[in-house]
Amino acid sequence: MVLEVAHNEVFGFIRPDVDAHTLGITSIGKLLEKCGYRVFIGDVSIAKAVNSISKLDNISLLCKWIIDNRITRLGFSYRLDPHDAQYSFGKVYHLLNTKKLFHDLGGSLKAIYFAGLPDSCKRIKQEYHNRVPVFMGDETQIETLKRIGVPERKIPTSIQKGSKYDDERMLFARNLINSGKYKFQLPFDCSGYSTYGTNKDTLVERIRLNRILGNPPLTRAHVGPYNPNYKEALKEFKSWLKTLSETKFLDIISIGSSQLSQSDFGLDWKNKPNGGGVPINSERDLVEIWEASRPMLVRTYAGTRNIPNLAKIYEKTINIAWHALSFWWFNKIDGRGAYSVKQNLEQHIETLIVIAKTGKPFEPNIPHHFAFRGADDYTYVLSAYLAAITAKKHGIRYFVLQIMLNTPKYTWGVQDLAKARALLKLVRELEDNSFKVFLQPRAGLDYFSPDLEKAKIQLAAVSAMMDDIEPENMNSPDIIHVVSYSEAVKLATPDIINESIQITLKSIIEYRKQKHHGSMDNMINNIEVNERTNDLEKEVKAIVNLIEKNIPNPFTAQGLYNIFEKGIMPVSYLWEGRAEFKNAVKWETSVVNGVVSVIDERGNPINPSERIKSILFK
Image (cartoon, rainbow, N blue to C red; front, side, top):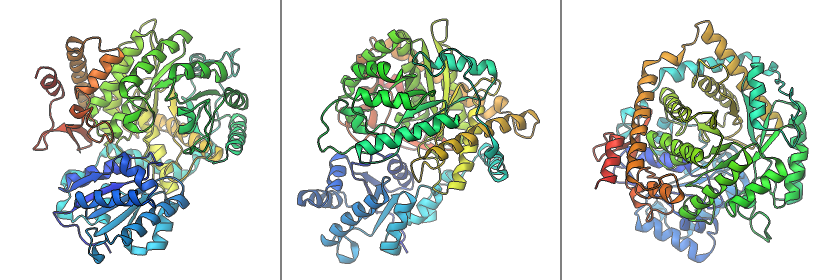
């Protein structure tokens, strides 16, 4: 039983640096701040110390951090291998106990919590019993706060509100999954063109035929087994690809390459940890993957070093279906690469030029990375819109617009829908004979429950929302990035990926039928969604107008850097680079009634364009 949290207590959250998942930590930190508590999140130096906590200097660093910040409640997050999670948490717990930092030994820590995968939580619960409350990510905001020990009187009423649209979709999804109808969903054939499955095949051609046939959206999935053995991992991956190609549910394979593959491709890895994901370190590896994946289209992550050159290698080896770049991300500030933000932007602009010469599509892997770090809804839309303008100006002809829904997972569906529609409307206005947009929605990274049956219902519900982005367009979306329902528990095997695709496709087909018969609302005329969509569109246009008039060459590497550095796109959760981007981290954001807004010291939303004026005209 955890003691009730007093009004003056302080929370600290840590993770080992091998685990790059930070969204849950920042989300719960924000919740606790809304309840009136001070929260500290360990930076990269603390994460590295936690990873090698047995070293004397590292435990001293962690203890000093706890004592200096007067932390009374410590949260530990680890969302990778359950055995490693138990071992890593156990070392931290043991050393904190040895150093007498727990309250019953005279220290400041009144409680320690653990968050991780269900199997990890089970192990922790068996070993520590009620001394360590565990969190699997399935908890509602209210459940999370109560388990931590926050008294109900401290929980704001806004956190307890819900959304009618979300409830209705969940009911539709529950009925669909309980009926089992999705299990009989068959794949759709789109092989009727001459280059299908060859090294001349393209996403554009596959979408063209799929539209003509009137099929549901093409499906893309992120795939890759976890195996620390290089050769065994590749062998298993190729076996998975063979299964997926034969069963025909998946149209586009997105290689789940490891962090090391992205940062050190072609180098001697020596004893560096692979960090999870498929290890790929040669052109031969890529060619073998392409051969095993026939006739699926293939794509993969961009590199984090020598990015233009790696893009050329992807063209040569896997005929990459489309390229994705993150502009401000996947570098030093998020621990995903060695470049500074400015260097990263320079590399990405250079890579855009390479992509434009190939005629391949480009995807901005951008807006959700801002959302992960506390950005408001306007910034979510703005960041992708800036990327679209930049892409067009650098010769990109086809633009894959990925929209991650449920981010953060506490966003209400009507607000999520408005955000998606506003962004799509802005980007579609750029379309002409030389620039076309393909919509690709997906579920959020931390959306799914570790209860697999509940997760299937969630997948069906978010699939229905995808159809509400452009409900009048039967060819929309063009692609769905299918996130497997097992996301919160384990890597998806081919069987799980195929079942997730069946759920996604059947949900869209049935949802369209029910809307046609009037048993589900047609959200095209929903007043709340339309008003919010118009507001987002109007404000983002005003911000871009201000940027174009006041920041020189805004769609260059230097211009995009200046936009971020000036604080136009706030990221209050940013872990590293806070000094360099002090103007971006100083803005407070909060989720109120399902909307993420920048707020003032009284908690009231700040008008976005007025905030930008205060930045540019100070």
